[in-house]
Image 1 (tube, rainbow, N blue to C red):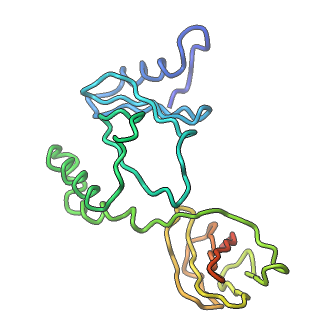
Image 2 (cartoon, rainbow, N blue to C red; image 1 turned 45 degrees about the vertical axis):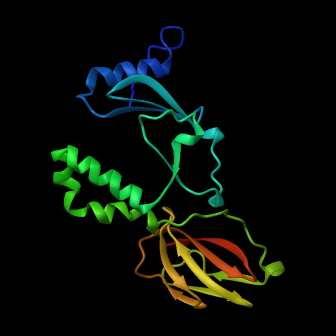
Image 3 (cartoon, rainbow, N blue to C red; image 1 turned 120 degrees about the vertical axis):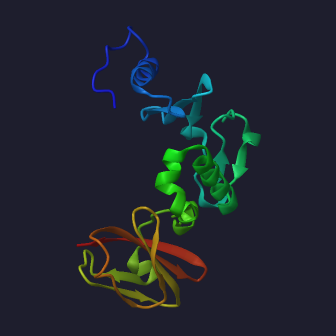
Length: 205
């Protein structure tokens, strides 16, 4: 993180950030600069000093659009360079990195396959829409809670509870769910009713 910046008119902030990275990196495979104001990531790799840009304002984050992979050496502006994600591709990537880096292999080697399938544990939240209980006939209570969640919903088909990382921590169709063992934090209760999803935010104390 850059703690000081000489200011505009001296050198562009992105260029300055890369200069800082040049002064501290030790042949790492890539350098990343996050530009939160403009929703971009600037990066370059060891074998090519060209600065590439990922512009997140152009991304489609709809759950139905699927997950894509990009080789860091490829131009992110070329749509054909983005490949459909698969567990097999992820396993190949991690095993390749482990095979060329003894340091990485010493850390990940024994758990490479488990790490490769980790993305499968995440679930995409389509939206967080406040539901009007009187209109939809849905009640989730108490909130906050330290133990049980109770659900009142006619024609309830299924219940899923996800943490803030999008990981599924419960699935079923019970109307009383004990979440006492879950860590304190924010959770999302996704209810399936009449082929529609309704999401409630619940705070676990």
